[in-house]
Length: 255
Length: 284
Image (cartoon, rainbow over all chains, first blue to last red; front, side):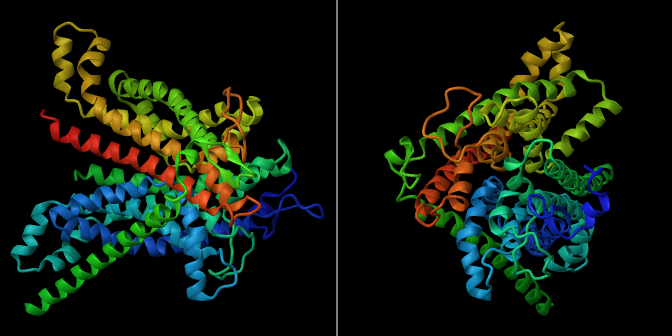
């Protein structure tokens, strides 16, 4: 593919019109932008919310609450993404439109919120594991020194589980970037860079799934989709690899 | 001191509220599907083909399609996945290669499903000439669930104590006899949990089927693995975004979504129950 389209144009071109009859362009920057905006919005929401729930389940909740909350969070992780997508398309989009008065009903914010909901289970279960694995002695020592439970959590438990929490965030990020159906149905899929979260964006994953069934085998367009997949793969692999490294180091420390 | 406790109370209550809001949001979400979908679902809806440009009738071809795709996927993924895990845990000597294979499996699990979709399209649909077909879709999805099956089987095998194997080997049993009689039976419930989760994943997966197996509409049940098919997940997507009259078919879309939701959630629930019981009953 890179015989016809320079790698620079592919990576930094701002126009993606692979099937245009006038002038075909293969600039993937708007797609990368779309992926990054939606994923970042999702993580801005999912990290604090996920952390809060993880702390609540691990440290605050009563035994019965815990027994209900943990499987519930797990069940959410099992809901197919097309279901989330349909909910975002119909219900959430209308809600956001009413609240903000935006003209493009399907937009980056809509995609970000639904993606956040989908990323929360990953972050909660990994972060909760990290918090629970902090040895009991740490807590007992802090309490013995007169700290309240909250002070113990904030100054002892959370710092001690920081790397596990980092792994949770990295792996959550990796999953969110690769998510397809929910984002495809929620964001409106316009390949433009507008720097407005209430405008429609188009992600890399959405582009691949929309364009693959219609592409001509072996064409420049076909090759450009594979190039897109390679970029996407590199990004998710990077996040997963980092998350894996953090987890492995944690285990080696013997906790 | 009282101030400190007050502060703690405020924080803890804040955490409780955030958790409650998220749980309430999810109940609301599932509620919209139950509320809007339950009225559509009846016997005809489940057993009839779509009629009048998919504005009436049922979703039978989609249900059967999802069933076929899932079964075919597991038919490929289970033997390969279980065999690979048995080899990695029981036979392979620990070392660089096994380490590399294990990390490859972990990374394979993190690859976005849409990349499998594109890969499956290139390899199975076009290059191997299978066309848009159940076979191509199942092969693609088997790659997708393979890491889940391997990881679950591996964990289950590793949780069986070493002494079980040593006892059997000391009595003169071969490696395979030991694995079959003294390891696999005890690992089975753990494997089952992972397998059920893999089935649920395959049943709900959408993107890789769009590119390899799915038809927007087909009036009949596929009779050969080389035919394409409708599926529940893709039916929701097509009805919600591609149908010429999206508003009119919305109830059908909700009904389809509810059927898929019930199917996948029950599978997940069964997996959780199996795992909890197994953990409780384990006495070594």
